[in-house]
Amino acid sequence: MNFGKWYKSKFPKEMPTVLRQGPYRFYFYSHEPNEPPHIHIDRNELSAKFWLNPVELAKNLGFSAKELKKIQDIVENHQTRLSEAWNEYFTNQG
Picture (cartoon, one colour):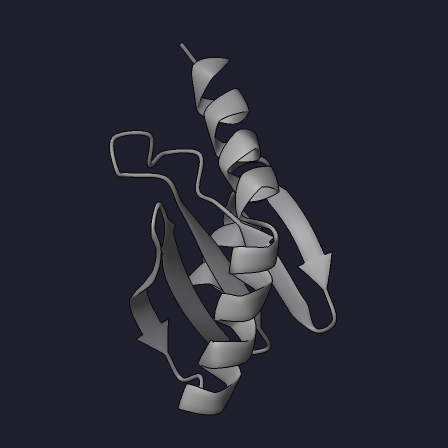
């Protein structure tokens, strides 16, 4: 079990899902407000993290280069929505 799945099973409200597309779940950890805006993506046991401004891969745990490109395209296509969700969530946490 990857860390994201384990954490989700222990703290489901601390990992708000922002988008689901195909087999991918896009979310962020509620305890990361001090990092630049970013999104985590999981599929099965695979996980990645992308910065949102600019869209750039921050971490990859198992995705192929081809699949990362597909995920990056999704993040770029939804960049505004993902950034707005990040800002709204962390603005309301204070």
